[in-house]
Amino acid sequence: MSYVNYTDLELLAFLRQNKRGAYNEIYNRYWKKMLLVAWNHSRDDFVAKDIVQDVFIKLWENQHNCQIDNLPAFLATSIKYQIFRHYRKEQRRTELARANYFYEDISLDEQKLDARFLQDLIDGIVEQMPERCRLVFHYSRTLGLKNHEIAKEANITTKTVKNTLNRALRIIRCELNNHGIRFLVLIKLLFFWL
Image 1 (cartoon, rainbow, N blue to C red):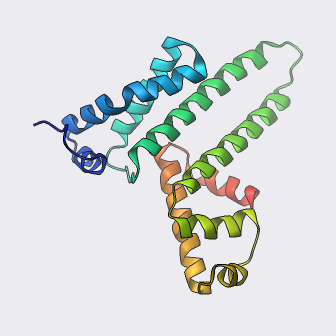
Image 2: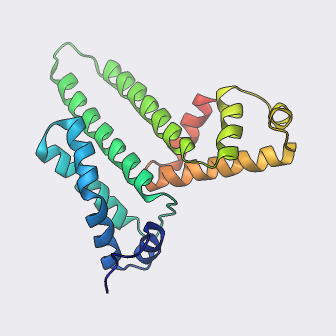
Image 3: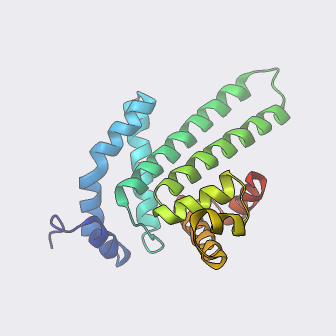
């Protein structure tokens, strides 16, 4: 069966049904673009190929759990995450090679990097949300407005604000789970972020 004429959403539905042909079509459609992005960041053919391979392996491994609405955005975010992991691993190796570096300093730097990456990843996820969801999330998390203030500002009910925030957090949790970030770490960092 040929999957060439199917949309991304149809391919994702087939992928959840364990259809290898759909997976192959997704790969054929996007691997060159992903490789270019990975190479632009790493300037190393082997590293770029490894990054793209890791993203596609995770896509296959999580095929039954994937709730992806925008495949190109998901793959782009996945590539950025893998690039970050690669840089973090390289930086850790460099730091450990320095004889006068203390473990606490390395751990603190990694926490800062992790928090920065998570913030960037969440920002990317929020940018893909529907407009109202994105706006309410921005009012709440960036501007620190309370639900009744958001309701007044957005001209919606307080209950709609609460439901929209819950939806935004569900979207973020799902996307982070798709990227392999554990929920407990997310909760810890979200509370830190708030």
